[in-house]
Image 1 (spheres, rainbow, N blue to C red):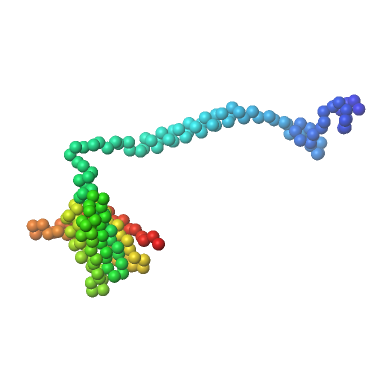
Image 2: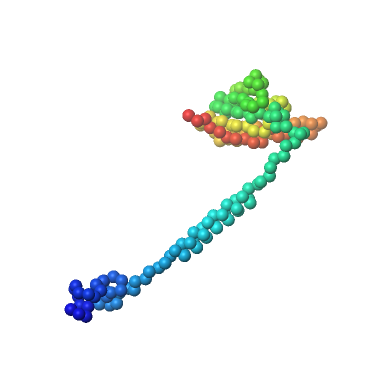
Length: 191
């Protein structure tokens, strides 16, 4: 068969896909060969550029101030003047303890208090006075870690936080608030 008939001989084989005719005898889709190498190069370069610019944006936002060493102030003096107070809030009362890195265990133990309930309520004024005594001894202290016992009322937790934050002091006939421990952290016991 000379003219490229259907079978063997020297012509091109017919395909239902690509350049040949489809099942209905219509011309098939044209074979297109895409060279995507250049496009992939552009996209990968664009991706690296975007990642680099994002990294530069983060670096520009981060505060890059370097602390300066000062001869007048010392961190050691600050740690000797500060402790962190731990208050365990139980259904039976308060347990106050202190932790610090520059104090001896005896100094920290002397700051501990157990405040039992008074008249069926927690002793909020007693807690404020105990914290005021700690603040007088360690004036740079500002943090209280509050660990409530499960099942306590929300109001009890809020009143404890209020008792730890400030105390009114009478100075020359004028009552003014004094900040005790403005930073209150609520924690939990891990079982």
